[in-house]
Image (cartoon, rainbow, N blue to C red; front, top):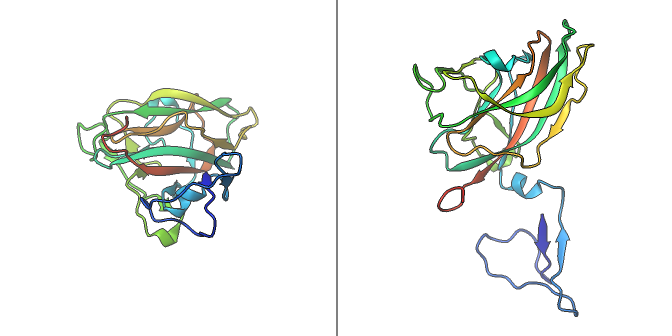
Length: 216
């Protein structure tokens, strides 16, 4: 995050406050990096973590029932941006070689019901990564109790994979804005092949206010 340098003024500014830009004697605007990459989003209470209540297997994409799923419900007025996926092996019982993929669904509404995109969806409310902000997630997360009327479409291979020994070759993935979830969209973490090996998993994401007029 680049911040303007304003002489003799410190601390966060109130949103919408008019301020003068700092410049050098060559006429250049002065900016400075302030803190780590996501500090401003964290300060505003926009970053959350979704984590299952138990270690889960990588469910094959073609029968993706009970795949960990993050859902941005219709009417949230938020844009959900995945930031990191962390995976740690727990039980290694299979030597199957499989990749980690992301499945996407759109037009999922905001309620699980018979005949809806999600007939069942047991929500484990994501945790705000800035507790003092007092924010509650608009997003819903089902760790391993979720069913689909139509299976999510495989959107991307993450490059993480379970090697023949059953361990993940890459246990951390940083998203770089490859995709975002608008209201009604959902994403699932799935396997390219079936595996009975189980993993603890954390999906860290940001909920950003939608711009006036929507996504444009």
